[in-house]
Image (tube, rainbow, N blue to C red; front, side, top):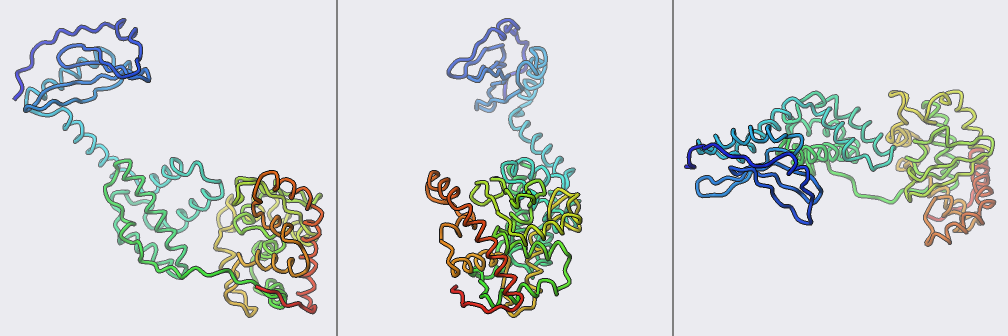
Length: 410
């Protein structure tokens, strides 16, 4: 047991504290009775209490100066000395209170509120499109199930129920599970919970083996183009599917296109660096057919920010799975064709019809080795890129009308 509490003759003066300048290493100004003010190299000053209990030396932080004034720190010091006199550890008491406070906070915090904090605190450096997609998946798949549950009450069975509803799309199901796991990893780091209910569900969803994206032959491309208008989908879905082929961009780049990026008079679409895979701006030269499709679409969505807004959630772009599902429904003889295959199909067609590799690589927005080479190639091939995009659109029109085809290599 520690000796009884005795009166302390405190010695520190405000002027002494204020005049204390930081040094290369932390140093302490002693006030009395184990109370000291530690001056850190950063210039911060922190009140701490050092004491002996049961033969061991312990230390507890009281607070930073001047938020904790001399009087406030000394009053707290007297309380802590009383704990030591009773044989209680101020350091362990503080840890217990902090843990209880964190547990109480977790009981009062819903999964939805903390997930929103997770987005703000950990995804701020990701692209706008990436964050929007994560938020959309949370809104669509997760919040309706566990959004209003307290973050500490969610069990593995709750996570399993969410992903089991998406087993038809295994990749989406596993992505949802991963998002929940990341949210809880952040909650664990914040000391709000101690276990992650999504971790035991790893491996529950069996993802299909990765396969190369199927390319279409010219005959299949003609059948695909004719099928697009016969499926009965929403107009924006049909236009997006056609522009995916006519622009040769990636699906996420197309679906997050904004009207402000387009110049339909010049026939150009400038994709900013933040939305491209190689983090470089990419200019798409629009064919007459692509420009006409956008002109037709403008009365429908021109009032919105996005060229292809979601028809279910205003203010956000069309969901990535929309085109996936649409392509699966298309009946043109190639059931395994996916949106990503449009890039390979267009690139192969152009190469087979004599367009050079450098031109096609630029149309696909693949990075060139070396900044100087990339800039030079980009400038030199603008006329060829324009001609290639127009040739692609004209060739597709002919194939859709039943023109003779050439055999394309894979």
